Image (cartoon, rainbow, N blue to C red):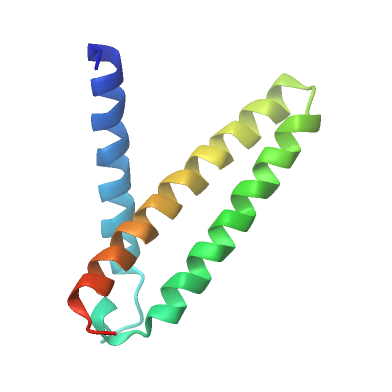
Length: 98
């Protein structure tokens, strides 16, 4: 792996970790991720994938540089959020028996 790729992966990992920390702060008061049914996380992941698909569709038809930048930024946000959700879901699935 080249240095530029390695730096890009480190940056992406940091962003995913920051998103995960931020998402934990948004949990309902008094709740922990362990107390919420996994279906909530899976539903949120499906929603993020849908938003990512929307961003991709918008980028296909966009011609204005400002619009392209807007949807490119939104797409990156959706990818990071989906990765964070996947990380948390995987961790919970490993901890729970079913």
